[in-house]
Image (cartoon, rainbow, N blue to C red; front, top):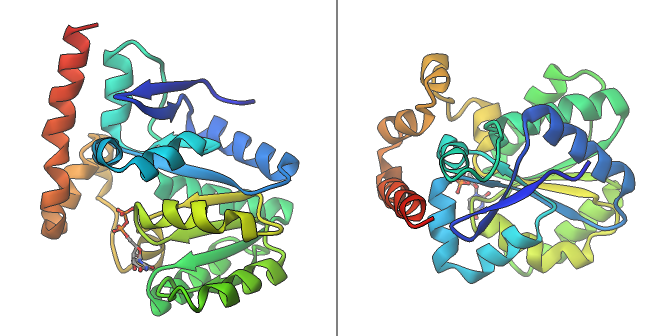
Amino acid sequence: MKPKRINILGTPVDCVTMSTALDYVEDIILKANKPSSILAINPEKIIKAKKEPLLLKSLKQAKLVIPDGVGVVWAARLLGLGKMKRVPGAELMPAICERAAQKGYKLFLFGGKAEVNARAVAVLRKQYPGIQIVGHHHGYVSKQEMPNLIEKINTSEAEVLFIALGSPTQELWMEQYFPKLKNIKVCQGVGGTFDVIAGTIRRAPLIFRQLSLEWLYRLISQPRRFFRQVALPKFVYKIFVCRLTQ
Ligand code: UDP
């Protein structure tokens, strides 16, 4: 069933939980006749979308926008817009893989460094016996090489495409290349998830995740993200202003 869609600071978010999101993804795989995107939203991306119209457009066109960050769940509750649970993209992807292994849906993994991409494929094959990963490719592809990659995706007959190029590159890729994809029904933008699956980047320890402090762990463990995370206080400020002026 199509989830309820709300808007936070002008950006769409769907009111889902892991289980309703997964069922909806399967529904799309079974019924779609063209590629549909699944994108993740967090406070940083909401702030970014305000400045990047193409990113905002792709979010608005997405079939499913999952609340990847706890800040989004918090804002939706504070503004009285809707109830949802956090659905991290890094958890939805393995959940889709598990369902695909059970049902025989064909998968393609595009993105990440060559060794990361190959390692993620190997890990998923080991973790979900019977999984049909019918193709994969690293994410450092020039514009000239793209037609070959599109051909590879099409001839693989994959129905689900995971794309890990970072944001907004992956969203812009979808916008540009969706019309050329023949069999893909669902395409999830997964950012750095292949790195997590391959084990080159560790997710936050359980205690950080349970306390909804994954963002803090990332800030400490990947200081290069500091400038990206300045979006957080900006987001909180804008949500409070929105609440006070409601
Ligand atoms: N990446 C890629 N091709 C590129 C640039 C980046 O495949 O041209 C990959 C990179 O190797 C990494 C992922 O994209 O695996 C980006 O991860 P990040 O955590 O930065 O994603 P975001 O937080 O932006 O969603």
